[in-house]
Image (cartoon, rainbow, N blue to C red; front, side, top):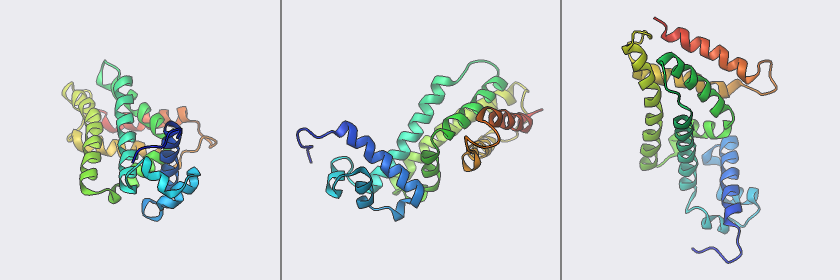
Length: 195
């Protein structure tokens, strides 16, 4: 369906995605209706279909955008150099990137079960790509004798799970600032791969 002349798709489209993300994070995908999303945006429910064909597509696009943004941001930030330096950069990057996108991270992990099979495969492929970025750092460190890791693939998934866990408890107004949290987690990561 074509947009009506004078509509503000460049404004409303992002607002639809922001509202859906917030509602999915707060109530869960299954509990949120298109009417609730429309109400949060301030449009009629039928108008949402100018921006997305259905709720499943909206969930998939939110998750895909998060993963693509994560991959692109890491690829821009990834340093060259020794594996230990790259591992520290990855650790700090992952914490910093995800704590600034808590709703997107929560939805990306908790709502995988609600993706249609083909959408699930696409998101899993993107997640694997990101895990592979870390795995390549761990393999390089193990090959150089800098890291003691028997299974780099498993280690990469375990480290990502640990780093992502910061989102469940970190609060900007808490006892520790983000830089302190990054330093503590980097110390744990470094010790976990140490020779």
